Image 1 (tube, rainbow, N blue to C red):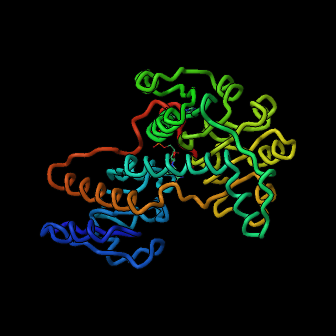
Image 2: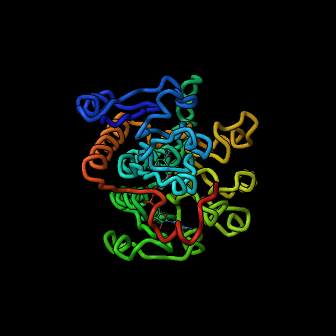
Length: 327
Ligand code: NAD
């Protein structure tokens, strides 16, 4: 019997054809990523999704044939993993597909902050040419602090070293080899906040990381620091961040993720000229999209051929066991 695969969101056409050409599969695309067609959901053996498709108990109760869910994303807070475990459904994600893209956007924000690219751009567009009002800093010899030295954090560290920066990191769960490979000292969180000229966050969303940067840290954070967050918005208390910005404690801030997305029009973050905002586009490159689709197609194929799995969820990571996911 053919396995029915329901694809609920954007998926690369080449990867779609790759699955469709396999005689063991019937591949169906849903027109909506929210309202999945019931006639296919009830008989689907696998779902291929992205973060806009929320997997919860209600959906799983309808999908009685479901064996496998693959999300073409790194994050997985759109999936109720307690419910998928209860129903015995295998869940996999594609965390390696967007590492380069997310690290690249992180550095895009760093460079925009360091060289004041956005204010300079706005000035020229407005017909002004006040070069003396735009002064950046050189990165070489300065300190880059990484919080979360996993896949993306390590790639960001590579780039920082290419700029001649001294890289330090805080990650209580990463193995020593992550630090040794790049010759990065393992510091406490407080030390990283106090010594870094540039800092970026690359941690998952957990109870422990929620608001891990708030007023209590801004009081002693290195004055004039450049702060970047491309991981999850809940990591930073945005009210406290605005207060620190108002006090002039930060040189510039680059954010791709927010406590509430889309960012509300009333957000105070919109009022600071030294804050650069992007709409959660860390994984939005053509390359990451194609890679995630093809990795998902390969995982699906392997699962139905011999039951093999990789990058399964919940993750088998020490931080996950230590701090259950914040639903
Ligand atoms: P990863 O699992 O490889 O690395 C995360 C690291 O954080 C791990 O080394 C872990 O030990 C560390 N960590 C966990 N809890 C910590 C804590 N309390 N303090 C310090 N370190 C802690 O994950 P990754 O693939 O590098 O992704 C990092 C983050 O980036 C995730 O939140 C992911 O969802 C996000 N992300 C965002 C985008 C985007 O579009 N902006 C794209 C891709 C990934």
